[in-house]
Length: 77
Image 1 (cartoon, rainbow, N blue to C red):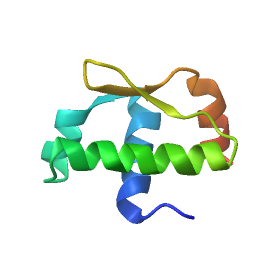
Image 2 (cartoon, one colour):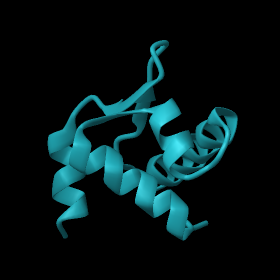
Image 3 (cartoon, rainbow, N blue to C red):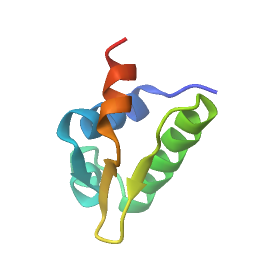
Image 4 (cartoon, one colour):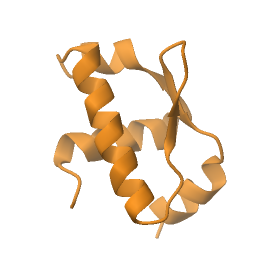
């Protein structure tokens, strides 16, 4: 399994921004919030399969990594 271009864009936004809002991603990519949640699930599945930290989606619609240091180190490789 791999990530598509949009998955990578979303992942990069969370890594670089430390936290993003689901509704902002939905507006930016002209998608429903539910579709963004599916994307986050797909990204998290990929990350977990590769033994990487997964993103957290809290009840406020915020998406972030709890430990950004680990994911930034992987991203910079």
